[in-house]
Length: 101
Image (tube, rainbow, N blue to C red):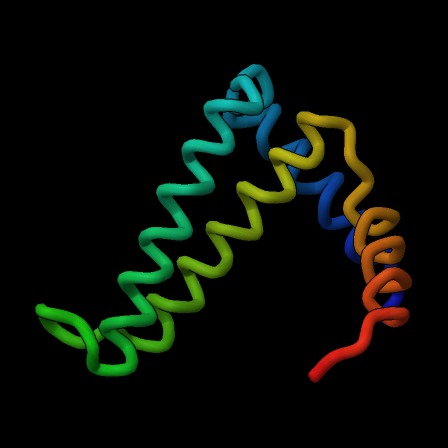
């Protein structure tokens, strides 16, 4: 994958934040929304693997929750002026030096 593609997608998501009126939301508000979406993802996965207390969850519902988490994460990164590609590359370089058991 070309890292430039992720940067373009981050830019696209930030433009959508602007278009939809979410660009002015604080980082704290975006973090709360991200936490909520991660909870929804956990619930969807629980339902998908049969651990839920209600009806099962389809793969499509899990995919949508994963997409929501990514959309909000990219918006939060943009709000904080973080280049996600650069951050991922730095982190992966650090991970390469770690010992994994």
